[in-house]
Length: 56
Image 1 (cartoon, rainbow, N blue to C red):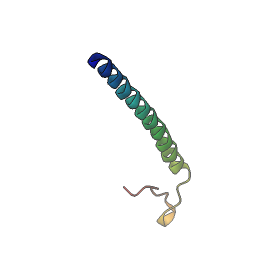
Image 2 (spheres, helix red, strand yellow; image 1 turned 180 degrees about the vertical axis):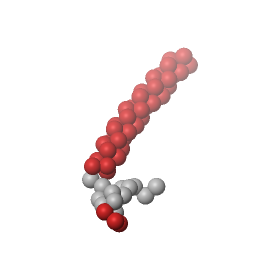
Image 3 (cartoon, rainbow, N blue to C red; image 1 turned 90 degrees about the horizontal axis):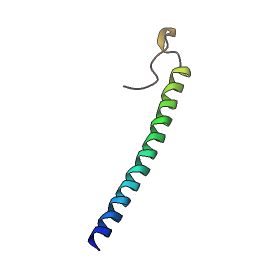
Image 4 (cartoon, rainbow, N blue to C red; image 1 turned 60 degrees about the vertical axis):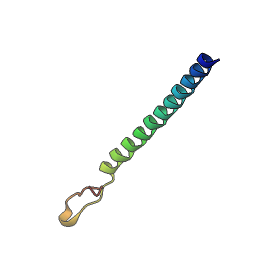
């Protein structure tokens, strides 16, 4: 009974980790797209220079 519980717990942990990693990959892709679009749509700063679109 204990080995069965260990196997089920391991399967649950690995499934949860795989799901979390998939979500993190999608978040990384979305952040990359927003970051790339920021370079295309950034506005002109003082003096006609194109400034940074982010604060840091």
